[in-house]
Length: 263
Image (cartoon, rainbow, N blue to C red; front, side, top):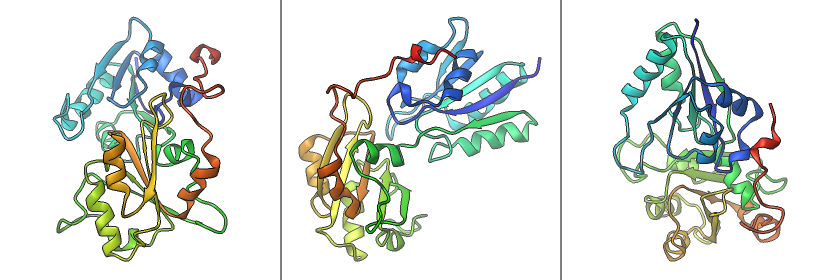
């Protein structure tokens, strides 16, 4: 039997935001290798006889399994002739190390398919009523990872360029939010320009803080913003005041039952 790996993006938090194809593959999988930030309701969709393996990471702490071991596990299970779903939060190719895992499979001569997911980079702002592009305000947006210190030498991110982005979205940045805000101001971004943080986007625990660039870090601390959270900088943040359509627990914002999608 020929094995196959599927790199499936689970989406930003709500279980019913997984793609139709991703859900179908999840339900048919022999093995599901999953991360911490997936909607855990999706595990109920896995067949009882399928193997479920957790390989996630908690914040800055150690992984449940090192990346090299995850790569080897994928290769081993596919070589055994199994259909393997590698389930990742958001999209596996957006700061998800999905490329590394696919390279390991390709190096072993194994078949794989990439099933894109909805990235929190666009979904979190959308659930806060913040379009990352908007005519007359932002015709471009940038997405960066915020887990590295923006003030350190040798950063892979050119923060001087990021400071000029019409809309800047920063992922994995709760701990470094204060440093990021300071660096953006140092590179010329208006300290009074709009900024927001969205925690646990699209879930019933969503929490949105609207502030200014200079005040965002303090506002996040006051509101108890915790990871996972997305930071957004730019004039489009002001649209939150008019377009804040999602209130967790309110009518019309609940989950669509997954059995609605009878594939």
